[in-house]
Figure 1 (cartoon, one colour):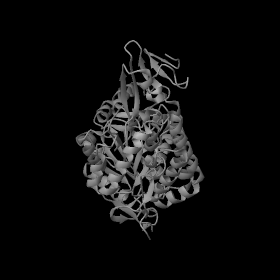
Figure 2 (tube, one colour; figure 1 turned 120 degrees about the horizontal axis):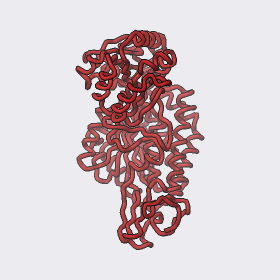
Figure 3 (cartoon, rainbow, N blue to C red; figure 1 turned 90 degrees about the vertical axis):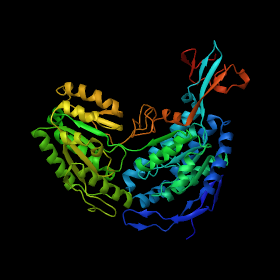
Figure 4 (cartoon, rainbow, N blue to C red; figure 1 turned 135 degrees about the vertical axis):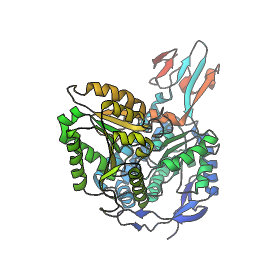
Length: 525
């Protein structure tokens, strides 16, 4: 079978490849027939050159033009829904329904349409006008954006269709998509649809480009190239930190989602009030999608007592009885096995699971571990390492004060949750713990598990390091996610005719929100 082509400068062409690879069906452990190239630097150079030209052309495009592309792309995805879902299921073993067809694909098209609306409106760019000093500023495109997609969301975080892609394009930048090697076929089909939409709507040929894989050295060279405006990365902490270090050397903004155990605190009053409900919620959340979510609850803090012991026993029963799902790849299984081994070496006790197998294809037994609060505090770094998959660590603290100490030792996380009594019995404990947890997470939840991320303008899918590379930005939530891929451009004393339309005295649409002399308004200056 011929090697699959890459998309460079508007053309599908043979890669300059050093080798090839094949994806695998995780449910059967069988390699899939299509071969994909591992590109050499020659392909990266060609993509960068084409992206630089496209970036220059896109700077003059209207928001309406970019919105037309995003809307057309969303429609094309819906037109190929069955093909996309079938292929993604084959490459990831994620369920056709409800996961892919009913959840992730509609979320993906929704993101694209929200990004289109933001591009068309333009208010996301925060046009700011100081009439007294004739100084004006606005967020403008940053330049070519590299997007590295993860293995666990073949649509909604795909490098050629997901949230980073939508935000980068809506902000006016071309995208070089680096496919995840777990689902290259799905990414290729997404890139085909995106390319067709770009052609139909008159965007530059290199608006969307695709390579599948490079050497580690070329990947680091790529992210550090001065022609790159920014990088969006979702993936493993180990690989992400290497890429970030390379990008940092040349000052390339690297927006990364790296690692998160998403702590959940369950207080005694909540257990007394909603014991069965919380046990079901946690088990469902932790095991959903075989635990392969970046917001999976990987660490639970409880207070010692008879009710907690009963709760833990109930969780063990639920984890034992629940079916074991299929992992995304053999690599995920090996990583999970290594992570559980590290936790036990650091002092955690396995309550259930802790061994490979038990499910279809690549799998690992549903796993719960336990450690005392004192035990956790002896080795907090090792005991909060992420074990990506259907696993969680229960930390049993002796007091609220010790629980606060445990939370203070946590690294940055995407989410953190506290379950507390609805009538106020846990309020003193909540006040103490929430003050600590709030500084450790991007999103604080009450009385619900963190799994899942709503595509809302108010959403923060980010957090302190190592959850992400920068605590001030979100990967989900439009228009805020667009601002990662923009630069602040200031115009000082520039003549009216030379200003961007959004900064001229006349409001170009009559609806654009601008800050004029400290007041947000849609009026003309």
